[in-house]
Length: 161
Image (cartoon, rainbow, N blue to C red; front, side, top):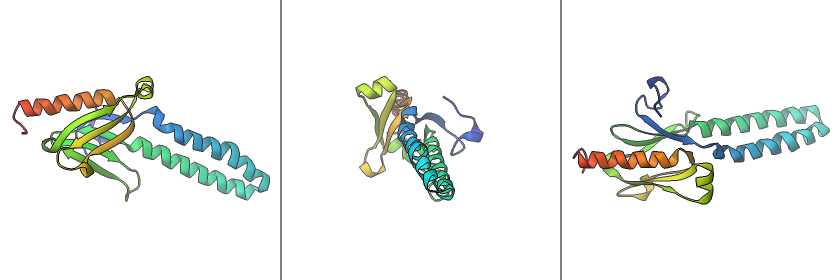
């Protein structure tokens, strides 16, 4: 799945995976609690309380949806990168350079197979603190296969050692 230059987080690279629909389940449950239970209860108290609950619910649910949508796993000539965040102080990119990459793996379970929503680990050869860990990634299995194939190709072509 390619992305045009205007929408790529770092201006270049190939998009591998974004969050699966299953990542939105907790936010959906929160929205049901806030809009289905808290808001009607607040209306019983007063319209002002209901307005405050509505504002907080919209902001909280909207923020969580935007944060989930911001997660993008991609690779370029330098390495594998994870872009996430929507607020200026929370936006960022973390990654593993090809020369430092150990392997990419996905965690297989009945639920991940059924919903096609995988947990991914992109290992760092030297330190666990620099590896990329992701949960509920759509297209995660194919992303891991593509990363490992590209990494092996770089090793075979002596681009990295």
